[in-house]
Structures are given as C-alpha cells and as structure tokens.
View 1 (cartoon, one colour):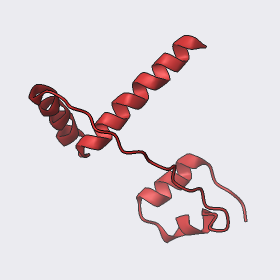
View 2 (cartoon, rainbow, N blue to C red; view 1 turned 120 degrees about the vertical axis):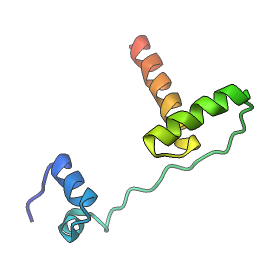
View 3 (cartoon, one colour; view 1 turned 90 degrees about the horizontal axis):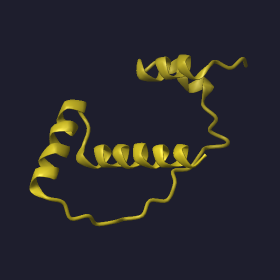
Length: 81
C-alpha cells in the first residue's frame, strides 16, 4: 500500500473519511505521554483572559495553558541553540 503525506492524511481524517483508516498503523500505535498533575494559583483576571482565549479558539482552559507553556518552552529552547 502506498503512503500519503501528513497533510493529505489530516484532510481525510478531519473529513471523517473511512479511507483514513487504511493509513493508520494499528500494529505499532504511539502511546500518549504520561501526564503529570500540577496545581497553579492564578488571579481572577488571568483566568478571565484564559477563558476569553479558550472561548475564541473553541477549546478548554487547559488547552490554552498547555499551548502557552509549549510556546514558551520552544522559544526558550530556540534561544539556547
């Protein structure tokens, strides 16, 4: 079976096409990384800002925080290399 590029796979998957399944490797699944729980105390204003961004993006609060942390971590890593 011939492969397809990531963009084509993403398109098929996002459209809900059953054809996407034939490109999935069920024999060698990639597991989710183990998550670790943390607690963060934030001001009400910061939580309101996070909620505004979350609502605008159609995601939950945790996703916004994870994105922001990842963006910062990547930026710091790029500065160091």
